[in-house]
Length: 184
Image (cartoon, rainbow, N blue to C red; front, side, top):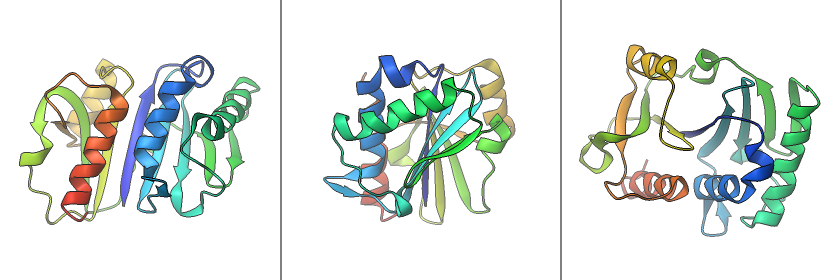
């Protein structure tokens, strides 16, 4: 199973940077026009402490276009704005209040990675004995001091999927492509 977590600063991103969020979700959960069933795509809203989970095994009636995902993002924005703590937003999309440690609770055999400039090249890493992969990426590739300390203390490996300056959604695509290539 792959867990891809996008860190965003504020809930306003669901309304004002909808295209960016839509591209990231589509990059994480779609393979061409089919849904990747082995992925759980999550968005963690730092300021509010909310986690939005796209559980692809139960995701229904979603297409990769901005119109389809935009409606779901609007529901998320409204739910958080109205103070909802836990809610099923759509089939396979769940909103919940979580702390950082709750977001990263993981099963045994899970390799934890976070995207950062200067991290290890993911193509050079040994991944053959891995059952689950948790990949964390921030909207601007920066993390708070607390997040970096958490990553280090919980043995997250800093990785870089590309040395080129490419956007976040392209990095998610490259991450998925690398794991697909290795059969994970």
